[in-house]
Image (cartoon, rainbow, N blue to C red; front, side):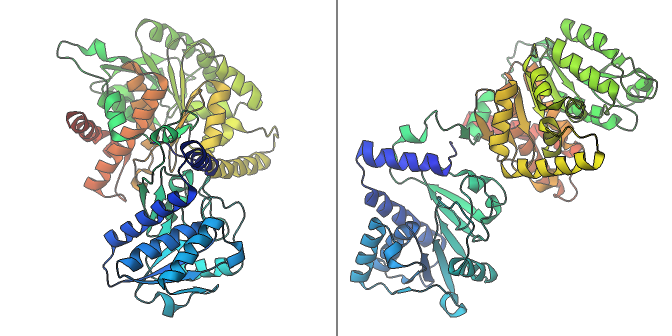
Length: 534
């Protein structure tokens, strides 16, 4: 399903009205009717329904009031705007409401008496909000949030940015939101997702061709789409048919990262996995691995990989590997910085770069343009899997040598990424040619073609050490099994979250550890298999 900005939704509205000939008032009638239907579905008829209306969104609220009133529900309309500021279509609905005798008042306050035992329909502000809310509507919203009254928001909770999910001064904390045609970015991005409550996406007559336009470049991957990406396993096959992953990972004190990434590769279906690890730690790894093979790599004598390992990695991968997962737990040093530059520049085997592999690229003090040039000149497909802090280091333009200045710059940039993760991910992928899996809530997967996906699986229990290593291993496994970088990233992120959801159901979110996610990958496969069978 596509996900739209306010501008994109307005264009769908415009085309439906002008090109198809569906009047705006008809769309308003349909929108209000589906809101009323959802109220009747969710609540008992004896409930008082208070509909707070304002702006053009108020027209939808007035239609909902009419539908409920005609079905003998107890309805009261509070118009938190001035009549001369209402749109023509909204005024037409106001005229109908008055003729029907629906109780309504123009006022800018709501009291406990108004909402006692009631359900509130929030039809105050829609998707076009572009500045912080202040004044009477801000006070109405603050009052609603302080009460225990259930709220159904129309289209978008009032006060939430449609494009970024940011709170514009103050915002309604809805129990439910009914939106039309397509979800908006603000429904899925935080904090907007927390304010949206349970989201219902309802059809009101937009032509399907307008809802699936290629110009809309952000989507939600659904279960059916992901099920189709799962690599097939013919009866007549062997381990060599399912790819060989080389996992270059681990250092002194961080051997677990390598082991978790390798386990995830196998659990996600790779036929063979070799762990390329510092040679001085071979005894440690040999005592802990079972299904995985090991490749000793030159190190600096302190349990960290040396730049001299490049030749061994390239030689092994050119002969045997279908994908390389590099970075988990390798540390950050001058050696790893050189190693990562060489690997990106020289590898003809697809690379999935995670954790310290990303940090080694981002901390090289070579600046944004040079880092992007290195990535852009890669010989093989690249997937990068940063969290926002790692992403900030990748794109930082701060050339200061001051650690304090660097720390502040990265912190500010990280906050900016969190506020605009979709656009930043898309811009980075287009500039570098790499596929980006920007981890977080939610994870955004972006490709060099300017398209992005918002992942909807996963839970807070997955905020635990090693979860990213599992994700990187899964993505590398799917690359090795023949998926392109974008589809491998999509399937990896979706199944990683789905496995985390199964693990949380079994273990509880507070107790969840990364190995639980890996152990639940089979549950995720079974869930997607059901989708293919249905």
